[in-house]
Image (cartoon, rainbow over all chains, first blue to last red; front, top):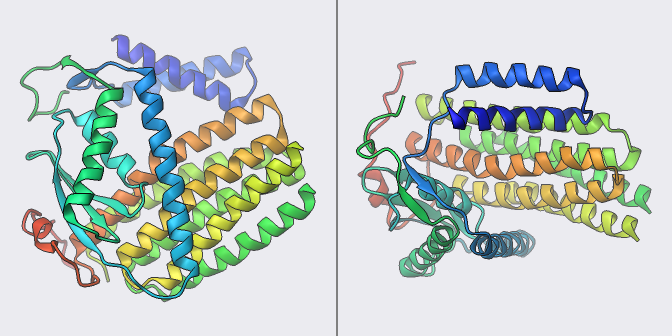
Length: 172
Length: 88
Length: 115
C-alpha cells in the first residue's frame, strides 16, 4: 500500500513537472492518471530490499561517467582511423550478487561501458553474458564486471530478503 | 555565436540522419535496420533540443519528450518481433 | 560566456551523433554496429541536452530536459540489450567469435511462428 502511494506521488510530480505549471487542473489530472496507472500496473515490492549509501553512490556515478566518456572517445577514435581490428567474443561471468535489482543495474550499466554490451542475464544460475568488442582476455573482462558489481553493491547495500522463498514465483 | 554553432550542429545531424537512412535501406538483416532506426530517433531528439536552443521555443521540448518515449517503445516492440520472427 | 559553453556542448553532442552514424556504415558485424550506435549516441544526447539547458536558461525548461536525460539513460541500455538479445536468438551471421558456445548451449530456442 505504501509503495502504491509513493508511486502515485512520484507520477503526479512528474506529470506536473512536464506541464511546468502548478495549477489545480494539472495536479488533479495528474492524480487521476496516476491512480489509473497504478490500478492497471501493480507496484511490486522487490524481493530483496536495499539501502542507499550516498558516498558510495557518488563513487559509482563518477566511475560510470568516466567509463561512458572513455567509451565514446574510443569509439570516435576507431571510427575515424582506418582498419577493422575488432576481436569480438561472448563472455560469461558468474555474478556474486543474488539480488535481482543489483543484477539488473549491473547489466544495464555495463551496456554503456567501453567495449561491452549485455546480451543475456540468466536468473537461474546468476550468469551474465556480454558481448565484448575487443577481447584482451576473458579474465580482464570478468574483472571489469566484478569491479562494477562491487561498486553497485557498495552503493546499495543489501538489507534483507523481503519476500522469503519467492525467488522462483511471481509476486502478484 | 549560438546561431552559428546550432547551424553547424544541425548540418552535422542532417548528415548523420542521412547515413542512418542509408543503413536502414541497405541493412544486412533486420536487426541492422532496428539499430539504425533507434539511432535515427536519438538524432531526432538531439535535433529537437538544438532547435529549441536556437529558437527558444519551448514547444520543441514537448515534442522531444514524446519522441524519446516513442523511440524507446518502438525499439522494444520491434526487437520482440525480431526475436519471434527471426532475422531476415 | 554561457553561450560559448552551450555551443561547445551542442557541437560535441552533434559530433558524437555523427560518429555513431558513420560507425554504422564502417563496421560489418551487426553487434559491432550496436556497440557503435548506442554508446556515443547516448553521451551525445546528454551533452547536447545539457547545452540546450544552458542556452535556454529557464527553470521550467530545465526540468523537462533533465527528465528526458534521465529517461534516456534508463532506457538506452535496455533497448540496446533487447536488440542484442533478439539478434542473438534469431541467429544472425556474426563475425568469427570465440566463446560463442557458452551462450548458444544455454538458450532455449524461442518458438518460431510459421510464416
